[in-house]
Length: 136
Image 1 (cartoon, rainbow, N blue to C red):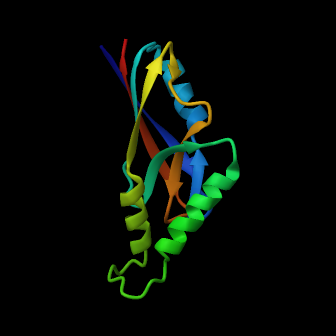
Image 2 (cartoon, helix red, strand yellow):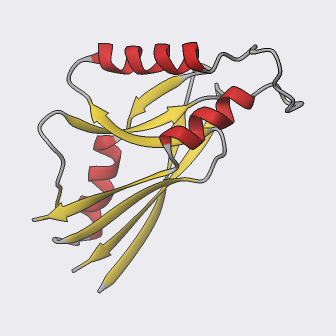
């Protein structure tokens, strides 16, 4: 079994944003030479997350961000965290810091409308996403 780990940069330009990183992850898979296995996409930031969702209609991303911001507004009374980004930490925890995707025939095994997103909840920032590929 081979294990390949690579980090990709992600630059965000808004406080709350979802960036489709599917092509970047697929490129890492292609270059790894692994035909069948697993791909883990991991964000090691406490105010950034990784998710898989529809990437055909941009309104899906807009709706998701709108709903998260309505449920967890930045200026909600009662937050006690001094940095002013409690909402970002909550959103990150709910969305999650990683996803796992199967690799079949050197391709990500995603559904027709699925894409991999980096979710920024405390930007704009320069971030890193770690991709680990295991397989043969």
